[in-house]
Structure formats: structure tokens, C-alpha cells
Image 1 (cartoon, rainbow, N blue to C red):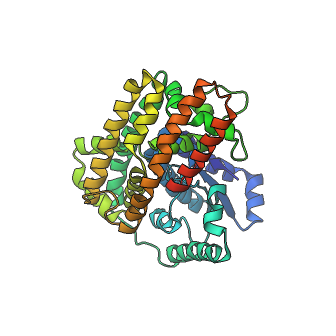
Image 2: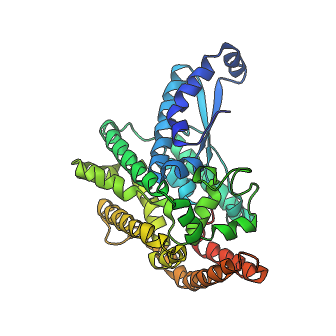
Image 3: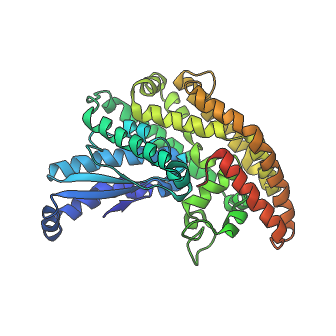
Length: 382
């Protein structure tokens, strides 16, 4: 089963599948299986590699191109979505994700991963498990039995989205690729605590590799920023991408896309949700743990955050984030006052624990409790 994860993988995925299907031996094998091919799409590494905009748009374009290539060869594709629990790793409501998916990408078939951290919330008791399966089945049926009509304006929207994704990626990679960024990341987030917790089935970075971003796995990358309340992977670069499209004269087109294109509307809604869960004041407390690096990196975070919030609200016609989803907005607003004291305590404990070179196990246990508390409150891990 082909797997495409990084931004470059997604761009080259169609050629890879075409080469695979052109092989006579493999094609004979596929014919014996009803000319049905499964392709897995990874959300985590593409987001870490190029930012959330490039990830979402790369996945959307890859599905369209793969469907077209397979149809020309008489092969039926089934997409296996390797989605994570957080928005930055493809999480979110399945019904909205399917509504935003390209026409024909579901067609009665869907396969997705369910991350370990969401199992208890979705399948922990019988009633919840049944409800989760009902929602998944219902979303697939609605998407398959009531497919959207072709949207001729997408031919005009796609080049604009290409521009947004390109400029967003430039901004994101300039941030994470700056000199000393990984040193800043390791000081301004509790990544060292997360590594000591040995969560998940794999180590936080690839064995035998240094601490470069390319060697860090996506789950601890997202988890650390969620704990620091900056949630960088879920929004950074979006504002720069949108601003570039506006500067190129596409503001009216962006408004039209936000109103009438399910993909773009869902993308903006997901970013709005991530922004609502973040807290710049708490993020600054964490950032100050980085010492002199704070002034080099944090002003850029604040500027990009303001730009992103401004354009998300403007394009969706909202005075405040999640104005169209008051129930979710209220839920986040009620939880945050309980999370904030835990985050403040976490900053203090982190500073004291690092002063012992990570050797005080009592402080580590307290930090782990803080990590768990923030995770439950924010309802995001990796």
C-alpha cells in the first residue's frame, strides 16, 4: 500500500501510483482483487514539514490527482487517512472532514486511524462507541449518496489556494528553520518532560538521530506546542499566506472561497478552533524560559498570530473566533480558567526541574501531573 506523508511525497504521489499501476505483474495482482487500490495519506509529517496550510492543500490536491489518474486506468481508489487527534495532525470532526473532501474521494469507502489518546473519549463506554460509529457511518453515507455537484469556480479558486499555501510554507519554514530555533523550541516548551514520559509506541525522535526538527516525530512536536499553549503547528503561516493572496488582489475571491468552498471553509474553521485554544499570555511565560532567544522568536509568533486571527475573522465575517459555533466557544471559555493555573505552575516547575539538570524525580512527577491536566483541559495531546 503506497503511503504519502511529507509535502514532497504528496506532490509526487500521482506519479508513483501511475508507475505502480503500469507494472504488468502488479496490475495482474490488482485485477484479481477487483481493481481496487488502497492509498494511505499521512497528515502528521506533512504538517511538521511545511505547516498546516501546505499540509491541508497538499492532501486535497493529492486526492484529486490520484482519483483522476486511477480513473483513467480503470482502478477504484480507497483512501486510508492517517489522521491524528489534533487539528495540526488532521484531527477534527469526521463529518466536516468528509464534507471538505474532494468529490468522489469517499464513494462508500473510508478508512481512518484512531489515535490512542482519543480512544477513551470516543469508545470508552458502549453508548459513546455506538454514537461514534453512527456518526462515522452517517457521514460516509451522506457523502456517498448525496455527492456535491461539480463546482466550476474551483478552477479559479485553486491558483489562489496555491498562492496561499506557497507563501504560508515560506513563512512557516523561515520560522522553524531559523538559526537556534531547535534550541528555542527545547527551552520554550516542555518537550524534555514529554520525552521523559515515554508516551506512545515509538520514541519522540528517531533513534540515533540528533535533535533536528526533521528527526523529531510529529506527535511530540504538536504535543509540546499544545502544552506551551502556543499551538504553533495548528496555525503558523496561515496569516502570511492569506495576506499574500490579499496583496495579490484576491481578497474578494478569498471571501467567496470562505463562503462557498467546503474545503476552505472547514480549513478556516479548524484554524479558528486552534487559535481559540491557544493563549499568548501563557505562551509568553514559557517563551521567557528560553532566555535571550525569547526576543528573537516570540515577537514573530505574536505578529503572525495577530495576522492570522485578523484574516480568519475577516474572511469568515465574524467579530470573534468561533462566533458561528457558540457551544464550542463556550466550552473552551469555561475550561480555560481551570487550565491557566496549571500552566503557570508548570512553567515554575519546569524552571526548577531544569535547574537540577532533570534529576529531581519529585518535580518530574509534578510536571507529569501538569502535562496530564493541561491535556485533559485543552483536549489535545499530539
